[in-house]
Image 1: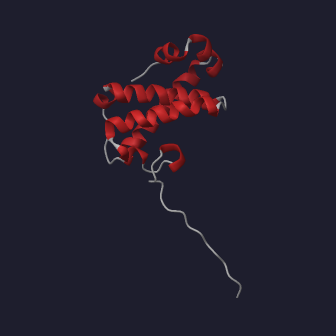
Image 2 (image 1 turned 120 degrees about the vertical axis):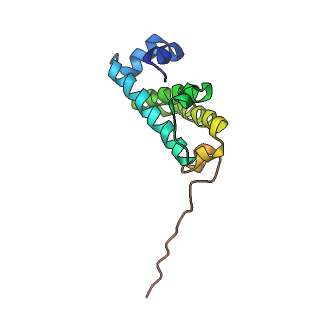
Image 3 (image 1 turned 60 degrees about the vertical axis):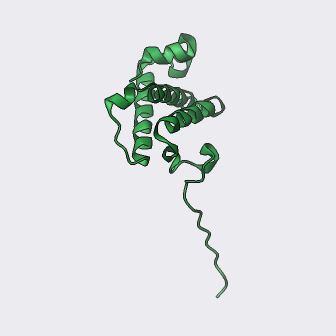
Length: 125
């Protein structure tokens, strides 16, 4: 599992302070949201996540990237956040395979597993 110190080490104390408004709870929520996201990707692949999985370097780095994404996203800095989200997804794909893209918007993943669009056309009676 990653920690607040991991986040600070990755983005720096100053940037961390800005993104969290110096509230450790905001950093903890970002880590938790990132963990939940990882669990959802494992579920998309039909797998359960274990402590051992969270110890894997690919999963740990994906967790870190996704937590950073969550911090930028809270501050509505989506352009800065976007690459972190994509990095996290690619890292998990390296660990689990392309099943991690299941249910993810095609524009984000480059994969078309997001389902089918439905068009309804009404004609005159």
